[in-house]
Image 1: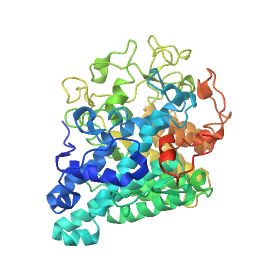
Image 2: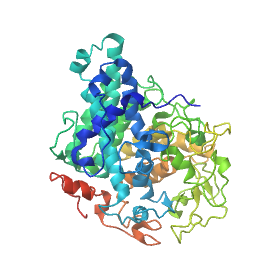
Image 3: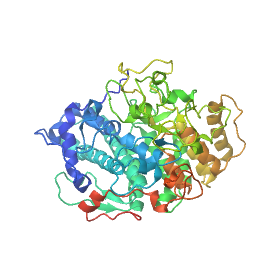
Image 4: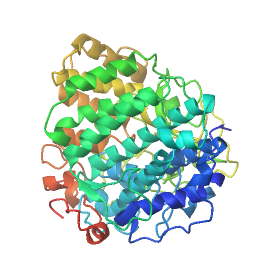
Length: 531
Protein backbone atom coordinates (compact mmCIF):
# COMPACT_ATOMS: atom_id res chain seq x y z
CA UNK A 1 0.00 0.00 0.00
CA UNK A 2 1.31 3.43 -0.87
CA UNK A 3 1.80 6.23 1.65
CA UNK A 4 0.53 9.06 -0.57
CA UNK A 5 -2.93 9.31 0.97
CA UNK A 6 -4.69 12.55 0.07
CA UNK A 7 -6.47 14.15 3.00
CA UNK A 8 -9.37 16.58 2.56
CA UNK A 9 -10.95 16.78 6.00
CA UNK A 10 -9.60 20.17 7.08
CA UNK A 11 -10.03 21.96 3.80
CA UNK A 12 -13.61 21.58 2.58
CA UNK A 13 -14.37 25.19 3.47
CA UNK A 14 -11.10 26.31 1.91
CA UNK A 15 -12.16 24.57 -1.33
CA UNK A 16 -15.57 26.20 -1.32
CA UNK A 17 -14.17 29.68 -0.71
CA UNK A 18 -11.67 29.16 -3.53
CA UNK A 19 -14.50 28.49 -5.98
CA UNK A 20 -16.02 31.89 -5.24
CA UNK A 21 -13.13 33.56 -7.06
CA UNK A 22 -13.84 31.73 -10.32
CA UNK A 23 -16.42 34.18 -11.61
CA UNK A 24 -17.76 33.23 -15.03
CA UNK A 25 -15.67 30.07 -15.22
CA UNK A 26 -18.26 28.24 -13.12
CA UNK A 27 -21.12 30.73 -13.20
CA UNK A 28 -23.29 28.26 -15.07
CA UNK A 29 -22.62 25.48 -12.54
CA UNK A 30 -23.89 24.92 -9.04
CA UNK A 31 -21.43 25.89 -6.32
CA UNK A 32 -20.60 24.07 -3.14
CA UNK A 33 -22.11 25.50 0.08
CA UNK A 34 -19.90 27.65 2.26
CA UNK A 35 -19.46 26.49 5.84
CA UNK A 36 -18.78 28.76 8.81
CA UNK A 37 -15.13 27.66 8.77
CA UNK A 38 -13.10 30.20 6.79
CA UNK A 39 -9.74 30.14 5.06
CA UNK A 40 -8.53 32.54 7.74
CA UNK A 41 -9.08 29.88 10.40
CA UNK A 42 -7.57 27.14 8.24
CA UNK A 43 -4.36 29.07 7.60
CA UNK A 44 -4.01 30.40 11.14
CA UNK A 45 -2.73 26.95 12.17
CA UNK A 46 0.30 25.53 10.36
CA UNK A 47 -0.94 22.02 11.10
CA UNK A 48 -3.57 22.58 8.38
CA UNK A 49 -1.08 23.58 5.68
CA UNK A 50 -0.16 20.05 4.50
CA UNK A 51 -3.84 19.19 4.04
CA UNK A 52 -4.51 22.45 2.21
CA UNK A 53 -1.60 21.70 -0.12
CA UNK A 54 -2.81 18.12 -0.55
CA UNK A 55 -6.04 19.53 -1.96
CA UNK A 56 -4.04 21.08 -4.80
CA UNK A 57 -2.41 17.77 -5.66
CA UNK A 58 -5.70 15.96 -5.11
CA UNK A 59 -7.40 18.25 -7.62
CA UNK A 60 -5.25 16.68 -10.32
CA UNK A 61 -5.89 13.12 -9.19
CA UNK A 62 -9.51 12.86 -8.05
CA UNK A 63 -12.80 14.55 -8.85
CA UNK A 64 -14.22 15.13 -5.38
CA UNK A 65 -13.65 15.13 -1.66
CA UNK A 66 -14.66 11.54 -0.88
CA UNK A 67 -13.91 8.12 -2.35
CA UNK A 68 -15.01 7.36 -5.89
CA UNK A 69 -15.14 11.08 -6.80
CA UNK A 70 -18.06 11.76 -4.45
CA UNK A 71 -18.85 15.26 -3.18
CA UNK A 72 -17.54 16.69 -6.44
CA UNK A 73 -15.53 19.90 -6.31
CA UNK A 74 -17.55 21.21 -9.24
CA UNK A 75 -21.20 20.30 -8.72
CA UNK A 76 -23.24 19.72 -11.84
CA UNK A 77 -20.47 17.63 -13.43
CA UNK A 78 -19.84 14.04 -12.34
CA UNK A 79 -16.56 13.87 -10.45
CA UNK A 80 -15.21 10.83 -12.27
CA UNK A 81 -16.45 12.05 -15.65
CA UNK A 82 -14.66 15.37 -15.21
CA UNK A 83 -11.50 14.03 -13.52
CA UNK A 84 -8.57 16.25 -14.45
CA UNK A 85 -6.23 13.55 -15.73
CA UNK A 86 -9.00 11.66 -17.49
CA UNK A 87 -9.91 14.76 -19.46
CA UNK A 88 -6.26 15.53 -20.26
CA UNK A 89 -6.17 12.08 -21.83
CA UNK A 90 -9.36 12.79 -23.78
CA UNK A 91 -8.00 16.10 -25.10
CA UNK A 92 -4.42 15.03 -25.85
CA UNK A 93 -4.60 11.34 -26.75
CA UNK A 94 -8.09 10.36 -27.96
CA UNK A 95 -7.92 13.22 -30.48
CA UNK A 96 -4.83 11.61 -32.08
CA UNK A 97 -3.52 8.45 -33.73
CA UNK A 98 -2.68 6.97 -30.32
CA UNK A 99 -6.20 6.06 -29.20
CA UNK A 100 -9.83 5.53 -30.10
CA UNK A 101 -12.66 4.82 -27.68
CA UNK A 102 -15.68 2.57 -28.13
CA UNK A 103 -18.17 4.41 -25.95
CA UNK A 104 -20.93 6.63 -27.29
CA UNK A 105 -21.45 8.75 -24.17
CA UNK A 106 -22.71 12.19 -25.17
CA UNK A 107 -20.38 13.79 -27.69
CA UNK A 108 -17.38 11.56 -26.90
CA UNK A 109 -17.01 10.22 -30.45
CA UNK A 110 -16.55 13.75 -31.80
CA UNK A 111 -13.19 13.95 -30.02
CA UNK A 112 -11.34 11.43 -32.18
CA UNK A 113 -13.30 12.50 -35.26
CA UNK A 114 -12.28 16.13 -34.59
CA UNK A 115 -15.84 17.36 -35.06
CA UNK A 116 -16.36 18.83 -31.58
CA UNK A 117 -18.04 22.19 -30.97
CA UNK A 118 -18.28 24.74 -28.17
CA UNK A 119 -21.07 22.81 -26.40
CA UNK A 120 -18.98 19.64 -26.05
CA UNK A 121 -19.27 18.45 -22.45
CA UNK A 122 -15.82 16.83 -22.41
CA UNK A 123 -14.12 20.03 -23.48
CA UNK A 124 -16.21 21.87 -20.90
CA UNK A 125 -15.18 19.40 -18.20
CA UNK A 126 -11.50 20.00 -18.96
CA UNK A 127 -11.93 23.76 -19.00
CA UNK A 128 -13.76 23.88 -15.66
CA UNK A 129 -11.30 21.47 -14.05
CA UNK A 130 -8.40 23.70 -15.09
CA UNK A 131 -9.96 26.82 -13.62
CA UNK A 132 -11.18 25.06 -10.49
CA UNK A 133 -7.60 23.92 -9.89
CA UNK A 134 -6.35 27.45 -10.48
CA UNK A 135 -8.90 28.75 -7.94
CA UNK A 136 -7.68 26.26 -5.32
CA UNK A 137 -4.10 27.39 -5.92
CA UNK A 138 -5.07 31.05 -5.77
CA UNK A 139 -6.68 30.54 -2.37
CA UNK A 140 -3.58 28.83 -1.02
CA UNK A 141 -1.33 31.57 -2.38
CA UNK A 142 -3.63 34.32 -1.14
CA UNK A 143 -3.18 32.98 2.38
CA UNK A 144 0.56 32.32 2.31
CA UNK A 145 2.00 35.69 1.35
CA UNK A 146 4.85 36.90 3.55
CA UNK A 147 2.41 39.28 5.22
CA UNK A 148 -0.16 36.55 5.93
CA UNK A 149 2.46 34.18 7.23
CA UNK A 150 3.75 36.86 9.58
CA UNK A 151 0.27 37.81 10.78
CA UNK A 152 -0.46 34.14 11.52
CA UNK A 153 2.79 33.87 13.49
CA UNK A 154 4.23 31.19 11.17
CA UNK A 155 7.90 31.25 12.09
CA UNK A 156 11.08 29.21 12.18
CA UNK A 157 11.04 25.78 10.53
CA UNK A 158 7.31 26.10 9.84
CA UNK A 159 7.94 29.32 7.94
CA UNK A 160 10.59 27.66 5.79
CA UNK A 161 8.25 24.76 5.06
CA UNK A 162 5.37 27.11 4.27
CA UNK A 163 7.48 28.91 1.67
CA UNK A 164 8.38 25.61 -0.02
CA UNK A 165 4.69 24.72 -0.08
CA UNK A 166 3.96 28.13 -1.58
CA UNK A 167 6.43 27.36 -4.36
CA UNK A 168 4.67 24.06 -5.03
CA UNK A 169 1.28 25.79 -5.18
CA UNK A 170 2.68 28.35 -7.59
CA UNK A 171 4.04 25.54 -9.78
CA UNK A 172 0.71 23.68 -9.81
CA UNK A 173 -1.11 26.86 -10.81
CA UNK A 174 1.42 27.56 -13.57
CA UNK A 175 1.00 24.00 -14.80
CA UNK A 176 -2.77 24.41 -15.06
CA UNK A 177 -2.33 27.70 -16.87
CA UNK A 178 0.06 25.92 -19.24
CA UNK A 179 -2.72 23.43 -19.94
CA UNK A 180 -5.10 26.33 -20.62
CA UNK A 181 -2.48 27.97 -22.85
CA UNK A 182 -1.97 24.77 -24.84
CA UNK A 183 -5.59 23.65 -25.13
CA UNK A 184 -7.56 26.92 -25.34
CA UNK A 185 -5.11 29.73 -26.13
CA UNK A 186 -6.74 32.98 -25.00
CA UNK A 187 -8.53 32.40 -21.69
CA UNK A 188 -9.90 34.08 -18.54
CA UNK A 189 -7.17 35.18 -16.17
CA UNK A 190 -7.53 35.01 -12.40
CA UNK A 191 -4.85 35.14 -9.71
CA UNK A 192 -4.80 35.49 -5.94
CA UNK A 193 -5.64 39.17 -6.37
CA UNK A 194 -9.13 38.24 -7.62
CA UNK A 195 -10.97 38.12 -4.33
CA UNK A 196 -13.70 35.57 -3.59
CA UNK A 197 -17.21 36.91 -4.07
CA UNK A 198 -16.34 39.44 -6.76
CA UNK A 199 -19.03 39.88 -9.39
CA UNK A 200 -16.60 41.31 -11.95
CA UNK A 201 -15.98 38.83 -14.78
CA UNK A 202 -12.34 37.78 -15.17
CA UNK A 203 -10.28 39.60 -17.77
CA UNK A 204 -9.11 37.81 -20.92
CA UNK A 205 -5.41 37.14 -21.41
CA UNK A 206 -3.90 36.49 -24.83
CA UNK A 207 -1.93 33.35 -25.50
CA UNK A 208 1.33 35.25 -25.91
CA UNK A 209 0.88 37.11 -22.63
CA UNK A 210 -0.13 33.92 -20.83
CA UNK A 211 3.06 32.30 -22.10
CA UNK A 212 5.07 35.09 -20.47
CA UNK A 213 3.11 34.72 -17.24
CA UNK A 214 3.60 30.94 -17.05
CA UNK A 215 7.30 31.33 -17.82
CA UNK A 216 7.75 33.95 -15.10
CA UNK A 217 5.72 31.97 -12.56
CA UNK A 218 7.68 28.78 -13.13
CA UNK A 219 10.99 30.56 -12.71
CA UNK A 220 9.75 32.23 -9.51
CA UNK A 221 8.22 29.00 -8.20
CA UNK A 222 11.45 27.07 -8.74
CA UNK A 223 13.30 29.55 -6.53
CA UNK A 224 11.12 28.52 -3.56
CA UNK A 225 10.68 24.82 -4.31
CA UNK A 226 12.73 22.00 -2.83
CA UNK A 227 15.91 21.13 -4.74
CA UNK A 228 15.59 18.39 -7.35
CA UNK A 229 15.12 14.88 -5.95
CA UNK A 230 14.82 16.05 -2.32
CA UNK A 231 11.08 16.53 -1.84
CA UNK A 232 8.61 13.97 -0.51
CA UNK A 233 7.51 11.55 -3.21
CA UNK A 234 4.52 12.92 -5.08
CA UNK A 235 5.42 16.54 -4.36
CA UNK A 236 6.86 18.73 -7.10
CA UNK A 237 10.40 20.03 -6.78
CA UNK A 238 12.64 22.31 -8.83
CA UNK A 239 13.13 19.68 -11.52
CA UNK A 240 9.37 19.57 -12.14
CA UNK A 241 9.40 23.32 -12.79
CA UNK A 242 12.45 22.97 -15.04
CA UNK A 243 10.77 20.15 -16.96
CA UNK A 244 7.66 22.20 -17.60
CA UNK A 245 9.79 25.17 -18.62
CA UNK A 246 11.60 22.95 -21.14
CA UNK A 247 8.24 21.80 -22.53
CA UNK A 248 6.97 25.39 -22.64
CA UNK A 249 10.04 26.53 -24.56
CA UNK A 250 9.89 23.55 -26.96
CA UNK A 251 6.38 24.67 -27.97
CA UNK A 252 7.09 28.42 -27.85
CA UNK A 253 6.96 28.88 -31.61
CA UNK A 254 3.40 27.51 -31.66
CA UNK A 255 2.37 29.64 -28.70
CA UNK A 256 4.15 32.90 -29.52
CA UNK A 257 5.73 32.66 -32.97
CA UNK A 258 9.26 32.77 -31.51
CA UNK A 259 11.57 29.76 -31.36
CA UNK A 260 13.00 29.12 -27.88
CA UNK A 261 14.95 25.91 -28.54
CA UNK A 262 18.04 27.27 -26.83
CA UNK A 263 16.09 27.84 -23.62
CA UNK A 264 14.62 24.36 -23.93
CA UNK A 265 18.12 22.89 -24.05
CA UNK A 266 19.19 24.98 -21.06
CA UNK A 267 16.44 23.59 -18.86
CA UNK A 268 16.80 20.04 -20.17
CA UNK A 269 20.44 20.19 -19.12
CA UNK A 270 19.45 21.39 -15.66
CA UNK A 271 17.19 18.37 -15.22
CA UNK A 272 19.70 15.93 -16.67
CA UNK A 273 22.39 17.32 -14.37
CA UNK A 274 20.20 16.76 -11.30
CA UNK A 275 20.99 13.05 -11.08
CA UNK A 276 17.98 11.30 -12.60
CA UNK A 277 18.48 7.96 -14.36
CA UNK A 278 16.45 5.66 -16.60
CA UNK A 279 14.59 2.78 -15.00
CA UNK A 280 16.00 -0.44 -16.42
CA UNK A 281 12.64 -2.05 -17.32
CA UNK A 282 10.29 0.10 -19.40
CA UNK A 283 7.13 -1.77 -18.44
CA UNK A 284 7.83 -1.24 -14.72
CA UNK A 285 7.37 2.50 -15.23
CA UNK A 286 3.63 1.93 -15.54
CA UNK A 287 2.90 -0.63 -12.84
CA UNK A 288 1.35 -0.46 -9.38
CA UNK A 289 4.68 -0.02 -7.57
CA UNK A 290 6.13 2.58 -9.92
CA UNK A 291 6.64 4.82 -6.90
CA UNK A 292 9.45 2.53 -5.68
CA UNK A 293 13.00 2.72 -6.98
CA UNK A 294 11.98 4.98 -9.84
CA UNK A 295 14.71 7.56 -10.35
CA UNK A 296 13.36 8.34 -13.82
CA UNK A 297 10.11 9.87 -12.58
CA UNK A 298 10.31 13.64 -12.07
CA UNK A 299 6.68 14.39 -11.23
CA UNK A 300 3.57 12.24 -11.38
CA UNK A 301 -0.11 12.23 -10.49
CA UNK A 302 -0.33 9.66 -7.73
CA UNK A 303 -2.91 7.01 -6.91
CA UNK A 304 -3.62 4.49 -4.21
CA UNK A 305 -6.37 1.91 -4.73
CA UNK A 306 -7.47 2.23 -1.12
CA UNK A 307 -6.93 5.88 -0.29
CA UNK A 308 -7.20 7.67 -3.66
CA UNK A 309 -10.25 6.13 -5.25
CA UNK A 310 -11.43 7.62 -8.52
CA UNK A 311 -13.05 6.52 -11.75
CA UNK A 312 -10.58 8.71 -13.59
CA UNK A 313 -6.79 8.60 -13.38
CA UNK A 314 -5.05 5.26 -13.60
CA UNK A 315 -8.27 3.39 -12.71
CA UNK A 316 -9.66 4.67 -16.01
CA UNK A 317 -6.42 4.04 -17.89
CA UNK A 318 -6.30 0.38 -16.82
CA UNK A 319 -9.98 -0.65 -16.88
CA UNK A 320 -10.90 1.23 -20.07
CA UNK A 321 -8.10 -0.40 -22.08
CA UNK A 322 -9.28 -3.96 -21.30
CA UNK A 323 -11.95 -5.65 -23.40
CA UNK A 324 -12.60 -8.46 -25.83
CA UNK A 325 -10.78 -11.64 -24.76
CA UNK A 326 -8.23 -9.79 -22.61
CA UNK A 327 -7.87 -11.40 -19.14
CA UNK A 328 -8.49 -8.60 -16.63
CA UNK A 329 -6.66 -10.53 -13.90
CA UNK A 330 -3.40 -10.05 -15.82
CA UNK A 331 -3.89 -6.33 -15.21
CA UNK A 332 -4.71 -6.61 -11.50
CA UNK A 333 -8.36 -5.54 -11.84
CA UNK A 334 -11.75 -7.22 -11.71
CA UNK A 335 -12.87 -6.49 -15.25
CA UNK A 336 -12.53 -4.35 -18.32
CA UNK A 337 -14.64 -1.46 -19.54
CA UNK A 338 -14.09 -2.18 -23.23
CA UNK A 339 -13.12 1.31 -24.32
CA UNK A 340 -9.61 2.27 -25.40
CA UNK A 341 -7.65 0.83 -28.32
CA UNK A 342 -5.21 2.26 -30.84
CA UNK A 343 -4.99 2.85 -34.60
CA UNK A 344 -2.95 1.06 -37.22
CA UNK A 345 -1.05 4.30 -37.83
CA UNK A 346 0.36 4.00 -34.31
CA UNK A 347 0.90 0.23 -34.52
CA UNK A 348 2.93 0.66 -37.71
CA UNK A 349 5.48 2.83 -35.93
CA UNK A 350 6.87 -0.32 -34.30
CA UNK A 351 8.79 -3.20 -35.93
CA UNK A 352 6.56 -6.12 -36.87
CA UNK A 353 8.84 -8.65 -35.17
CA UNK A 354 8.05 -7.26 -31.73
CA UNK A 355 11.66 -6.31 -31.03
CA UNK A 356 10.66 -2.95 -29.52
CA UNK A 357 9.07 -3.81 -26.17
CA UNK A 358 7.25 -0.47 -26.06
CA UNK A 359 4.94 -1.70 -28.82
CA UNK A 360 2.95 -4.05 -26.59
CA UNK A 361 -0.28 -4.84 -28.43
CA UNK A 362 -3.02 -7.35 -27.69
CA UNK A 363 -4.13 -8.79 -31.02
CA UNK A 364 -6.04 -11.97 -30.12
CA UNK A 365 -9.56 -11.48 -31.45
CA UNK A 366 -8.73 -7.88 -32.41
CA UNK A 367 -8.84 -6.51 -35.96
CA UNK A 368 -6.10 -4.06 -36.89
CA UNK A 369 -8.58 -2.19 -39.08
CA UNK A 370 -11.17 0.02 -37.40
CA UNK A 371 -14.42 -0.25 -39.32
CA UNK A 372 -16.55 0.60 -36.31
CA UNK A 373 -15.27 2.97 -33.63
CA UNK A 374 -17.90 1.60 -31.26
CA UNK A 375 -16.59 -1.97 -31.42
CA UNK A 376 -13.78 -2.75 -28.98
CA UNK A 377 -12.46 -5.54 -31.19
CA UNK A 378 -11.88 -3.08 -34.05
CA UNK A 379 -8.33 -1.84 -33.49
CA UNK A 380 -5.51 -3.50 -31.56
CA UNK A 381 -5.62 -3.12 -27.80
CA UNK A 382 -2.57 -1.37 -26.36
CA UNK A 383 -1.00 -2.59 -23.11
CA UNK A 384 0.56 0.29 -21.18
CA UNK A 385 -0.70 0.68 -17.59
CA UNK A 386 -1.26 -2.21 -15.19
CA UNK A 387 -2.42 -2.57 -11.60
CA UNK A 388 0.16 -5.23 -10.82
CA UNK A 389 3.56 -4.67 -9.25
CA UNK A 390 6.90 -5.37 -10.88
CA UNK A 391 6.82 -8.78 -9.13
CA UNK A 392 3.35 -9.60 -10.44
CA UNK A 393 1.33 -8.92 -7.27
CA UNK A 394 -2.06 -7.21 -7.65
CA UNK A 395 -2.70 -3.69 -6.38
CA UNK A 396 -3.84 -2.81 -2.87
CA UNK A 397 -7.61 -2.65 -3.50
CA UNK A 398 -8.76 -6.22 -2.88
CA UNK A 399 -11.98 -5.59 -4.82
CA UNK A 400 -10.01 -4.94 -8.00
CA UNK A 401 -11.91 -1.73 -8.65
CA UNK A 402 -9.32 0.97 -8.00
CA UNK A 403 -5.74 1.20 -9.20
CA UNK A 404 -2.42 2.04 -7.49
CA UNK A 405 -0.41 3.06 -10.56
CA UNK A 406 0.95 6.61 -10.68
CA UNK A 407 0.77 8.49 -13.98
CA UNK A 408 4.00 10.29 -14.95
CA UNK A 409 3.70 13.87 -16.16
CA UNK A 410 7.45 14.41 -16.56
CA UNK A 411 10.17 11.78 -16.68
CA UNK A 412 13.78 11.69 -17.81
CA UNK A 413 13.03 9.98 -21.12
CA UNK A 414 10.93 12.98 -22.18
CA UNK A 415 13.77 15.31 -21.21
CA UNK A 416 16.17 13.32 -23.41
CA UNK A 417 13.75 13.54 -26.32
CA UNK A 418 13.18 17.28 -25.83
CA UNK A 419 16.95 17.85 -25.74
CA UNK A 420 17.36 15.95 -29.01
CA UNK A 421 14.53 17.78 -30.75
CA UNK A 422 15.65 21.22 -29.59
CA UNK A 423 19.17 20.40 -30.80
CA UNK A 424 17.82 19.39 -34.21
CA UNK A 425 15.87 22.65 -34.31
CA UNK A 426 19.12 24.58 -33.96
CA UNK A 427 19.12 25.43 -30.29
CA UNK A 428 22.45 26.64 -28.94
CA UNK A 429 24.15 24.51 -26.31
CA UNK A 430 22.99 21.19 -27.70
CA UNK A 431 25.34 18.53 -29.01
CA UNK A 432 24.20 16.10 -31.72
CA UNK A 433 26.34 13.21 -30.55
CA UNK A 434 25.00 13.66 -27.03
CA UNK A 435 21.45 13.75 -28.39
CA UNK A 436 21.95 10.53 -30.35
CA UNK A 437 23.43 8.96 -27.24
CA UNK A 438 20.31 9.84 -25.24
CA UNK A 439 18.07 8.38 -27.96
CA UNK A 440 20.07 5.16 -28.03
CA UNK A 441 19.77 4.80 -24.26
CA UNK A 442 15.99 4.76 -24.73
CA UNK A 443 16.16 2.34 -27.63
CA UNK A 444 18.56 -0.04 -25.88
CA UNK A 445 16.07 -0.29 -23.03
CA UNK A 446 13.23 -0.84 -25.51
CA UNK A 447 15.06 -3.52 -27.51
CA UNK A 448 17.03 -5.12 -24.69
CA UNK A 449 20.23 -4.69 -26.71
CA UNK A 450 21.81 -2.31 -29.22
CA UNK A 451 20.05 -3.75 -32.28
CA UNK A 452 17.76 -0.73 -32.45
CA UNK A 453 20.51 1.87 -32.10
CA UNK A 454 20.74 4.70 -34.62
CA UNK A 455 23.68 6.70 -35.94
CA UNK A 456 21.72 9.75 -37.06
CA UNK A 457 18.39 11.37 -36.26
CA UNK A 458 16.03 13.89 -37.87
CA UNK A 459 12.86 15.62 -36.80
CA UNK A 460 10.48 13.08 -38.36
CA UNK A 461 12.30 10.34 -36.48
CA UNK A 462 11.97 12.29 -33.22
CA UNK A 463 8.22 12.70 -33.66
CA UNK A 464 7.83 8.95 -34.14
CA UNK A 465 10.22 8.15 -31.29
CA UNK A 466 8.21 10.38 -28.97
CA UNK A 467 5.12 8.36 -29.93
CA UNK A 468 6.92 5.10 -29.22
CA UNK A 469 8.38 6.20 -25.89
CA UNK A 470 5.65 8.50 -24.53
CA UNK A 471 2.49 6.85 -25.85
CA UNK A 472 -0.61 7.54 -23.72
CA UNK A 473 1.40 10.01 -21.59
CA UNK A 474 -0.63 13.07 -22.63
CA UNK A 475 1.83 14.63 -25.09
CA UNK A 476 0.74 13.43 -28.52
CA UNK A 477 -1.65 16.18 -29.60
CA UNK A 478 0.84 18.90 -28.65
CA UNK A 479 3.62 17.06 -30.49
CA UNK A 480 1.59 16.70 -33.67
CA UNK A 481 0.65 20.38 -33.59
CA UNK A 482 4.29 21.39 -33.14
CA UNK A 483 5.22 19.32 -36.21
CA UNK A 484 2.32 20.66 -38.30
CA UNK A 485 0.61 17.26 -38.55
CA UNK A 486 -2.38 17.41 -36.20
CA UNK A 487 -4.89 18.96 -38.58
CA UNK A 488 -3.14 18.80 -41.96
CA UNK A 489 -3.13 16.19 -44.73
CA UNK A 490 0.59 15.65 -44.06
CA UNK A 491 -0.30 12.84 -41.68
CA UNK A 492 -3.57 10.92 -41.58
CA UNK A 493 -4.83 8.21 -39.26
CA UNK A 494 -8.07 6.21 -39.15
CA UNK A 495 -11.15 8.32 -38.49
CA UNK A 496 -9.28 11.62 -38.33
CA UNK A 497 -11.82 14.11 -39.60
CA UNK A 498 -14.63 11.56 -39.26
CA UNK A 499 -13.78 9.30 -42.23
CA UNK A 500 -12.32 5.81 -42.04
CA UNK A 501 -9.05 6.54 -43.83
CA UNK A 502 -8.67 9.97 -42.28
CA UNK A 503 -8.73 13.42 -43.79
CA UNK A 504 -7.41 16.89 -43.06
CA UNK A 505 -9.45 19.24 -40.90
CA UNK A 506 -9.36 23.00 -40.57
CA UNK A 507 -6.30 24.26 -38.69
CA UNK A 508 -8.58 26.04 -36.22
CA UNK A 509 -8.88 22.58 -34.60
CA UNK A 510 -5.40 23.17 -33.18
CA UNK A 511 -7.27 24.94 -30.37
CA UNK A 512 -10.37 23.83 -28.54
CA UNK A 513 -13.30 26.23 -28.21
CA UNK A 514 -14.01 28.21 -25.07
CA UNK A 515 -17.19 26.59 -23.70
CA UNK A 516 -20.23 28.41 -25.03
CA UNK A 517 -21.60 28.88 -21.52
CA UNK A 518 -18.52 30.86 -20.48
CA UNK A 519 -18.62 32.99 -23.62
CA UNK A 520 -22.19 33.94 -22.68
CA UNK A 521 -21.33 34.54 -19.03
CA UNK A 522 -18.21 36.64 -19.57
CA UNK A 523 -18.34 39.55 -22.06
CA UNK A 524 -14.54 39.87 -21.86
CA UNK A 525 -14.02 36.57 -23.67
CA UNK A 526 -13.71 36.05 -27.42
CA UNK A 527 -14.40 32.67 -28.99
CA UNK A 528 -11.52 30.96 -30.79
CA UNK A 529 -11.72 31.09 -34.61
CA UNK A 530 -13.72 28.33 -36.27
CA UNK A 531 -16.29 27.99 -33.49
